[in-house]
Amino acid sequence: MLVASSCSIEVLHQSGVAYSLPRYGEELRSWWRPRSGQRCGDCGVLPGGLHHLGCDILECPSCGGQLLGCDCRYDEDGPDEDDQDDEGDWIVAS
Image (cartoon, rainbow, N blue to C red):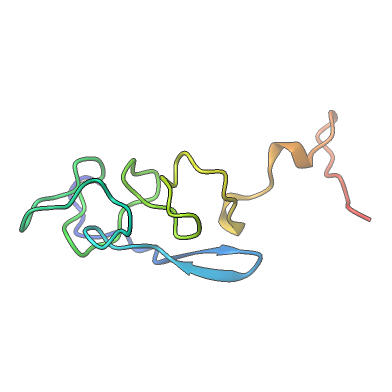
């Protein structure tokens, strides 16, 4: 992760709707703007590349907050722990 020029994941999905991930240096609310050629201080991506999932600086494409700390859920996240009952069986919504 620390030596790649870019992540290969370009979008995340909410209920099938695609949300494009912002590229490093093009974030809407970022407190960090890279200098020419400066890699991301967390995931190491180059300016213009896609942050790696799990990067502290990656901005949520839905709410604009920090993806690691926001409450937005994406299809790629898998089922929420609250979606299971105590025995591990999936709860089926009626």
